Image 1 (tube, rainbow, N blue to C red):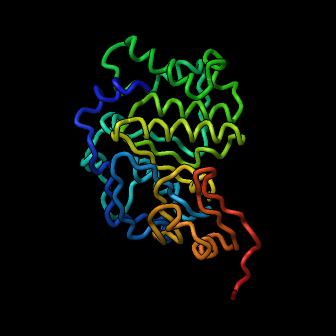
Image 2: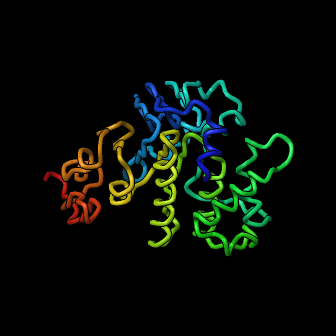
Length: 279
């Protein structure tokens, strides 16, 4: 999206804390899903929430957007307690892409993206809103789908459209839950490159937090990894600090070989044999 648009919609967007989580706890009945989760994300960071299925990644992303209400702790977005904000106010700061899209909008793709502009539209759409939609369609390679019915798209096409809708929303924080789950390899790269480029080119005004179980996606596209294990943060740091053979064995139960990033190639994790109990 146009950086001039970002500046107008997010004045005073210099480097500072965008997300602050303190002692967050969430339970389903008697089952503890998240326990004493605390971290801070500053503007400009690309953060992967990494962990195996069932580690609490999706629940954490939902707690950051009030989709789920934690029993304990506090979440602040842009220095505001999200529990005290209206959904419209929160949607100006945060956009959220769920792990799967079940809703079938009976409308064109262009109009689905235009829904992302709703937090910024006071009465009717403006040329600026239409330009933002057109630019984002190009960025995500969706021009050919612009006037196709959303409910007639494939699962991967729908996922790309919903991610593009979140980008059109022009928030400070993008929350993406398994954003590559339904995409082929080419579109996995296209989507992750597009989202990370938006953050890199935002002048330090935006951040993205994406939940993922794919270790190589986390290593390649994040500059920080928060590794969840059994509802707690096992490690938090750069990909090379967090994605280690020891941590992979502990969390995912497999052996691995790790090739660190270089000027010619990204960090690459090669999965080996399953770690047997007692080893």
